[in-house]
Length: 109
Image 1 (cartoon, rainbow, N blue to C red):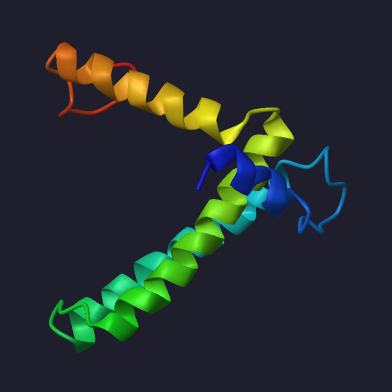
Image 2: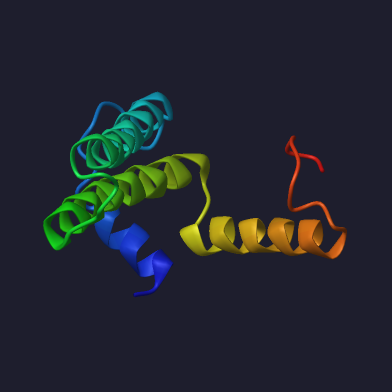
């Protein structure tokens, strides 16, 4: 699926206060959903000795979809298309790799 298509279609379901002028709501939603992904992984480590069965993976897939939804809405609020965000990230990672800076700390490495 095309990321920009997803963004346009998911935007039709963005029902929160001040859509088009509210970065706070999707930011908080993103953090919350990312926490749900982390919590599911934590419980798999604790309860299933780190074994990801199909049911666990499917549950995480749905949470990842929620993360994607909030990333899409935050990107829209900031005026970015998802393709632009994804391409910028790939360029950053390629630059780091070419300079031998994949590992380490900090945004500007």
